[in-house]
Image (tube, rainbow, N blue to C red; front, side, top):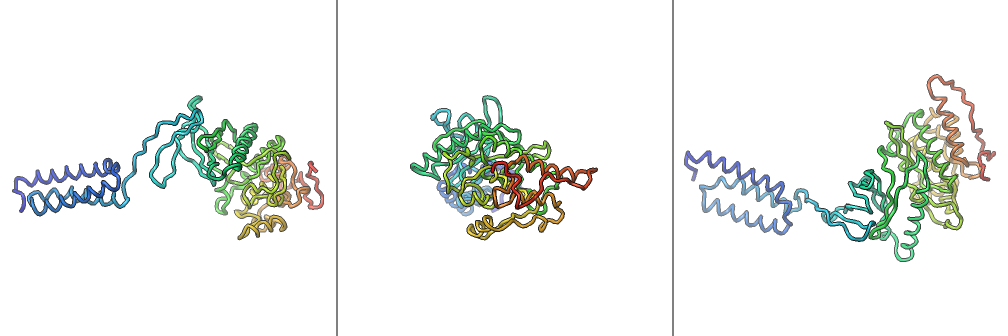
Length: 410
């Protein structure tokens, strides 16, 4: 049965208004339904649709909003609902180190609302043991990066006690470093077995993006960056601190401001025999020195080996040693000389190839012993690449595998 002629426009307007109401409900109201109530309401709507068709054919225009609701709730019951609104919980009363959490849907990562006195704004990174958050210090209005470690997930019993002590020892150690090219540590704390370090927030990106062939940095831009990293390491080594995990992902840069920052001294430890446990492997395997890979005590020369690996990768887009297993990689790092960088990039000056080879020397007594020396050599090469500078380059390094002239520590 069709509606009377005079009722066509009211029916159409009623259907349109019903569809608008349905759209608003599906967008903002339905997300609050749990899956089970959504399925119950779906069944009610099916029955309502059948009743409208069979019992009141004159109201068939109601089928439009009914069908829209039906399909909306079918999608909701199948797990295709829109986003669920998150409501922050009231902060816990565990003191200044307490954590307030924002509840998340099942399977989603839970974002803390606060860590200590810092308000968490967003997650900006994630590692193997925890996340890095962008935080805000309300006391002085400063943004900070907060690195967290879920120690209780990785360690238990005495191991947890030892890991917690090492974490705060390393935070205290890294906090002593005050250098323009090293990220500053502000604070550290722990709450609910979640340890955290608040540090300087750096705008920019890490060097990892420049380790592929199509994105390699020009030598005139790359060499001063690596020289500044070498100088920052020289400063840390004079304080008795070894980074142990130098790699492109741990160097932040901002081309617009010229900023260079070495980050993540999280695995750094004071080079003190009483605090060093031999046999502990720390760092990223492909960037580890032979002595570090073997579990022997490592000093600043180990960091400079890692810096040599980083420079090799930033020059060629490949690593000097790559194995399809840890055993093969360890064997190569321990015994096989690194291939000449010019085999993969012929335009590299000989003087720069010598710097890379000296940094990657297996014997620590031949390798660079001071980052300041390596930085000076890199800057000398960079000067020859600048416009108007003659090609002749009187090296500050006389490369010789037989003469350990750089080992001031031997």
